Image 1 (cartoon, rainbow, N blue to C red):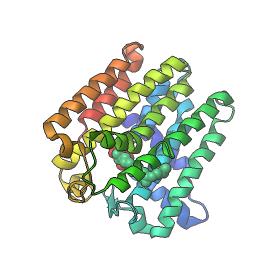
Image 2: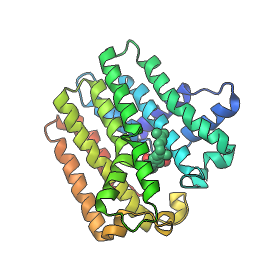
Image 3: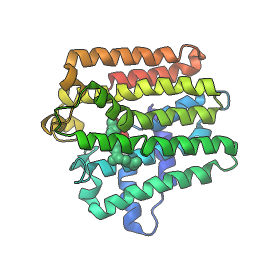
Image 4: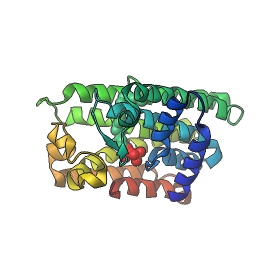
Length: 290
Ligand code: GRG
């Protein structure tokens, strides 16, 4: 992961140079280039490398694009009109550093640039049919059937006592799992996976995506505020529903274990050597401590 995250960081640094308007590019780079585990781009590359045409260089523009979308979503999520967070990745949030207006625009510009980067960097690298499928996946997982859908339902259900397990799963599957799913599926498409293989990877990613958020919810209860880089147990205090709140820590941990097993099962039919990084990434998602 360290090796891959170094390559991703280098590619991101090159993809978004500092240029006029300086304030906008500074703001984009501030959130994009600082910290972050790079889980989504690494999953994208690992999924690509599972298949015959899969090389890191083939997946890298898409890996950068998913990280740009992820960063845009974090910038917008932290805004006063959303979660109103002061810290992200241990640093002042984008709007704290640049002001609300610039932060909104930096998020917008990152979203647009993700597609521009894909279109320019992928031209002539893979067949245009694959590129179109990649663009479709990326657009779908961030819009009204993906991140935005999850965020809307999350915002609208805040403080409500009506939220049950089904709604919580909807929020997590859209707000968090959708982009992780998109990252894996995009990697698989670029690696040359056939339709059946793509759907297997989708199921794998969906389990990983939900697992990611269940673990996030558990960590929110068990880790200190300083380590998380955000307000202590903010979600708990603010009345946001989480798995531990609904199920308790033990049942949430059991559920996480089941999701990990389910995810690993999806990879059984693949070359075990090539699938090893994805298995390791699944373990990382389950056992990470931040
Ligand atoms: C379409 C850009 C866009 C936004 C739509 C604001 C919004 C609407 C959605 C918010 C989605 C969101 C922030 C979900 C939380 C996902 C999550 C678990 C983030 C933390 O991911 P990590 O742990 O963070 O990978 P790092 O810092 O390591 O990258």
